[in-house]
Length: 487
Image (cartoon, rainbow, N blue to C red; front, side, top):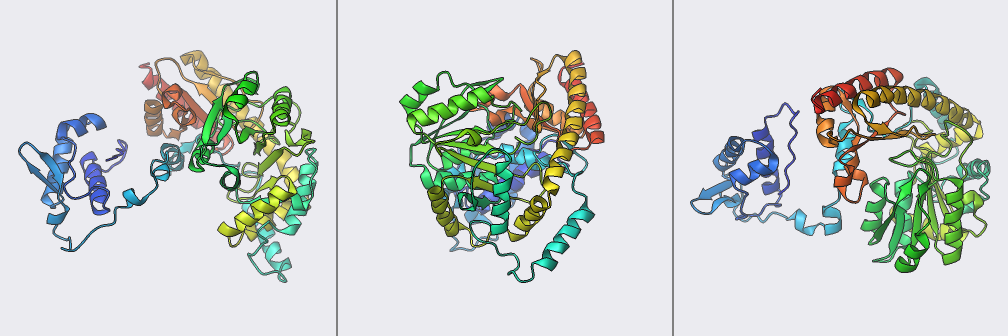
């Protein structure tokens, strides 16, 4: 029985307990006769007073959902519930759900969703800035698309992706040094969707996939749900360490190496060009494909653009995934894969089994921005905006570092800053205090294989909040840190 208590909620804790237990009973997750934790045990688990549990159990007993007896404690009593039909046999959805999906980690998703509550400044999201795309201009573009595409069946696009879009994507990737034609491209809504289809198509149960030890929780979870095994490789300030990779490959015989092309999530570290060449050499030597995911290589804020591994790939070993999530209108989801034509044909056939219609409207908006050159103008604008936001957040972090001894590395691009908290501060309690002051962030636990290693880390995002929100949010974070450290 899993219960989640929101201490900041206006709903009393005993009612939160009652509501969640009642829902689990009526849904069949807790079956008739199931023993309940004792009042003392549940109180200790939730870190609350025993009287709160006693009150919740009392209300559930009054509704006929629990019964108690001397020596046996509390038990589920659905048969005595006044609204229960005598012949009712509720579906046990928990038992029907595959274990690999039933225990899917939800804390990362819940943190992300709650970070956009009204009145909260969010440093948690990975969402594009709103400033470069004024709503009126976006409305005019959509009106133009509808007016000039009357001969097309509205809202339907090829499963492989609109042909105009793929032709423009060929030009887009050519600017990055990647050679392709439209037959080498498969369009998706986002990189997670693309990764899911690739892993589902190629991964066999028990296959290994090498990933950076610190990566978005979506990546290892996608591997595991596809039946694979994640092998995490350490990283440093140049990205994934390749020195011991050969021995790992010989021992694990991995199906893929997964790597980020730009500034990584969560650390903001960029894989060096030398390391990219090492990875490509390992791919050629052992015949292992590389999945290269890219959302941020264009978002270089200092120095020159970052080269992709795909641009160096003469052997066709790299599957390149690119998303416009951080450089297109927020909410317009377009991603694409560049790979060997045979692989793309198979990927398209598999996609056809799962998707009847790809998102025509989002694809047409992207075509308009690519064909007109607006996207390239917007990328320069994004870089200027993100640079100003990053610099402000880093300046405020410098103040906190001097006051509280936290540590961070200023990223050269992307949208994230990885912060190590002072020794006596812990991320989750700090998040609770920060929310009370009106700001949120992502805690480090979600990014580590062993969550306890992330208890002293937080991830801050600067792309979505405005400059004023960054200023006020850093004030709030400073107050929360002061409280956490007793200052």
